[in-house]
Length: 194
Image (cartoon, rainbow, N blue to C red; front, side, top):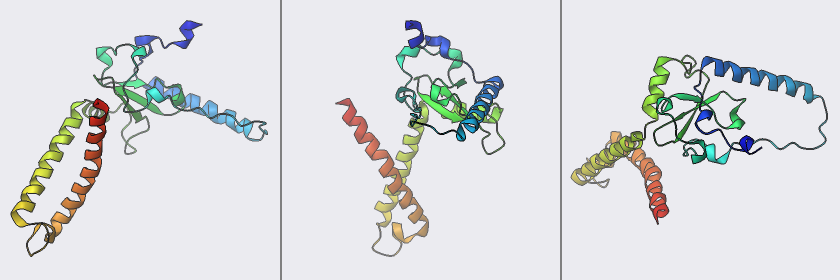
């Protein structure tokens, strides 16, 4: 009984293959057939709808109960560990920091299957933890460039200032969005360290 309650550690990681996708499609077809039969029946009580597991959500770290991820499976598409997604076309990818990235197994842009080399390369580029550092670096460079323009030209009061140039309107709007997205994240991270 105790073996049933705990996940089997590193044995729970399985590569996402065309056979995995076929098994998901089969489960979806079975569920649709089951629902079609039950559609005309009256249900006495409301069934609880299954919910995704909180600790297996996208962008969270994989719980330690699953053990260490084998090095050959890092950055590779894996079958979803959450039973909620058994009948949904999804797969996960884990990075070195054991962060969960969840992807749709449907064709991207209607042409790139999950097994297409271009899509696999894009997934490998997206999942490493350095991706966030690149984002922060470009945000810093962009902010520095805007600050230099504002200091050199002025902000908006006279002719030839920063906001009098229509190209800079877009820059200013993007800068406001970046500030809203970036700075609250930093405040929350500092609060968590306390």
